[in-house]
Image 1 (cartoon, rainbow, N blue to C red):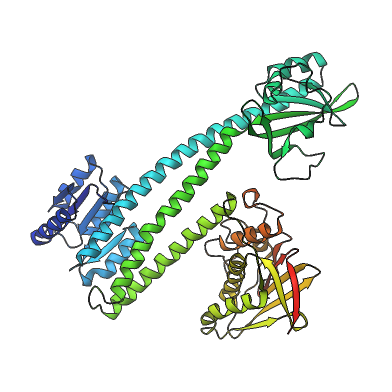
Image 2: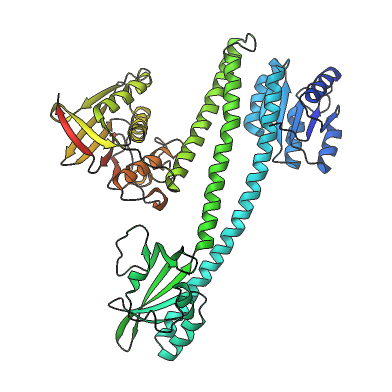
Length: 525
């Protein structure tokens, strides 16, 4: 797909301008404004939004960095590219770090390279604009939901207070509520409902719901164990028999006493609109991260061409710089992929594919692939099996590989030189446990409590978890295997009994996970 947009070019050299103008015209870019004077360009862009600004570095009166800095104040979201000579590369790098300039391109440039960067720059501006627009819409929607939720809580408190005054006020309240309200006794038998409850449960007869067990009318989507003192029930639904569909609901419970007898008031709210907003938000995040992969892959491929010499010979300094740029792009691609995996688990769109396999072979494969990372600090892996037995398990091999690789990578990153990383495997009946032990920086109690939260990097200055997604995703994988928590139902609750860590500062750390009912058999080695 041809990516076009409004481009502003500032350069005092006629030859450079003519070359760029011809190249852009050949590539299909028709909306291009060219200036020899930075001041004139600034006056132009004050009244003319653009998608990309390309500026020369060395210009009379005002250099490229000064010009782009002023242009950024006018249009903060517009992507900027700096044209520079080899001697000005250090200033260009500083401009990227300090001003947020997208790229610098050395003269003479490679045509394919500059066109690729121009397309990526325009796409970057468009994505930022779209993201800004979506965020504004989400903030408006969230504000409305917060206002509605706040209003709802106030209604619940007001109505429950009135219930204690008299049965007359009770009837007045429940018949005028916009949400369904049901009153049931200590045996969960319904004694009174309002009109909205009749509509929600599709009944027109006045006493049709009376005497029925309240909890038999609602669908427990997650098979949760309901605590009698629970105040809010989520992940429940009711059936609309008229439309033949499920309606997601949120139920607020409040206990009241009427004539010395204990009752419970259930306020049932249709959260279809809220669920749809959540789905739109998650789909937007998934689409955004998915679309980010294309320019990242394009950048990585372009850098590969340059590093492989397919675009001409390059000196060692430029090769080192391009290698750093490629590594940064690959790290960003890894973050995007991790975000996609987290979204798939949270939305319930990723399903486990369980097979029987040797846990020892999987761990050996993981350590083999990570072994090049051990050489710099002279680290070693130590693998211990119970009674020298090979353990066969039933699990999703690729997902367990991801967990083990992540925990091993964590241990390598935070181990001290000449250290040992232990991998212990044990089992208890059908449950299999894996412990990965390092003797490095260790963890504080505050870090441990936050380690498995989304985007958490802990509080310690010594130890962090890079993107903050690896351990969170590992927790989702293990809990999904143990069928104790669906990814979409996870809260920021830190470590669990399925995956956890322990340690002290400067005394190392142990990361452990348990696969329940996963053992198939053990084989004597």
